[in-house]
Image (cartoon, rainbow, N blue to C red):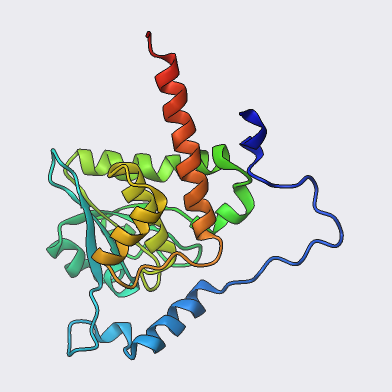
Length: 217
């Protein structure tokens, strides 16, 4: 019923509320690289290399591809052109829109970390991701391939990739994460990202149920 719409968020935070966990995603990316024994700048050489970008989904009509990638991919215009990527979703608060002045890449900044402040429940989650999904969906439908990136293409852009699989491929949250990891093994929604995916799954299910109920029986 409507009682669960608040998503388990209490009212104004009391003085005793624990401080927000500070996850430094750039630092987490570097720790991840350290565990993989490679530097991202060395991609494409030797057994420790991993892909600067990986395809997660192809538009069934246009054939355009949605990729998740890392900072070296984002900064390399030649690489983007080779993969015919013309639209880029920057999932960070601090990384530049590298090729904006070239006029060759259309950018959308999706600072996914803001979900911590802006999403208190399922409906908030649906609202929070609607603009980026519209940007990606419109580009793909028009035949333009899209890359979402952060630093490693693991946590922030990886979670964005999971959201896209949920939305475009109609997967549940767990299935979307498992599928994304198969396509790009470094993808790993950490911190509060799994909660965002769960809220989206519930929020979209409620939307579909409401739409179905509104149809003439």
